[in-house]
Amino acid sequence: LWNEVVTQVHGREYKDVTLDHQLADSGGMNLVKWPKQFDVIVTDNLFGDMLSDIAAMLTGSLGMLPSASLGEVDSKTGKRKAMYEP
Image 1: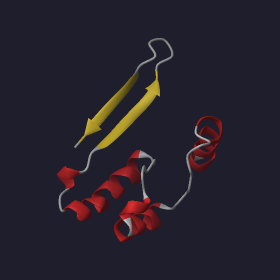
Image 2: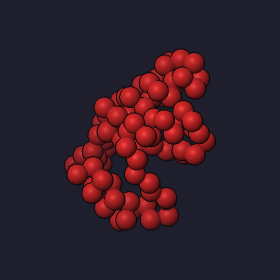
Image 3: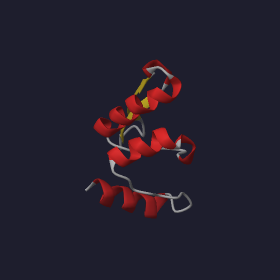
């Protein structure tokens, strides 16, 4: 489901951005092995938490890596609920 939805949104709204799908364990290995290959990583909350913990090894601290949990845009207000974490 994740791959289907992300691929649909990419094709509809972000055609100018390169999209690659990776499994979380492979992505974690590649993130540590060659971090500069990633500009942005889009994932669900569970895998995002795992990858941010793994990536913390690059800077030496969990507190150095920001993340954001973004909710859907409210159709009435045009705003979204978001939680940003260090």
